Length: 195
Image (cartoon, rainbow, N blue to C red; front, top):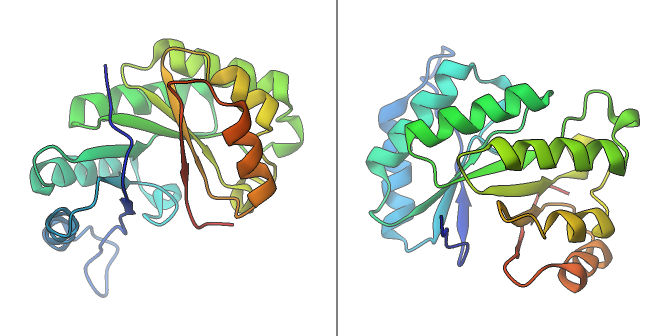
């Protein structure tokens, strides 16, 4: 599957009705349509900006389905699929495929951050990429992960045919340079603002 990772990807907020914790899918849909009309290359759904960690599995799917209905035709949708287990991440990627995502944005498990060394991360991401029906985009956001994906690990993972890029929200230019210098030829490096 070829997914175009080019241009600006708008990190979508998740809208709620004022005074409740109920999703406001109508407002969310208007925002998705407005971003498309503004010419963005794609949308990031259920990332950090979208408060993904606070959404139920049902809400995550509902937001994604609304994004797909409302987005400009041809817009690429990256869906936050990272979870605290490999099994949960794979299931989220499968659900995202069914609901219309183009790629899975995968933050590393980080509750047990001291155990997230390169070997554990390599195993996690490889298993996810092997099982995901969607292409995988790694997500480096040290502010919330409490560790960084090393350029050496990213270089190795970039060789996997189903890992197509990384979104780096570290704000660390040296780290970004490491990703750019060590990436494979079909691997895209996106930058975010979460550092």
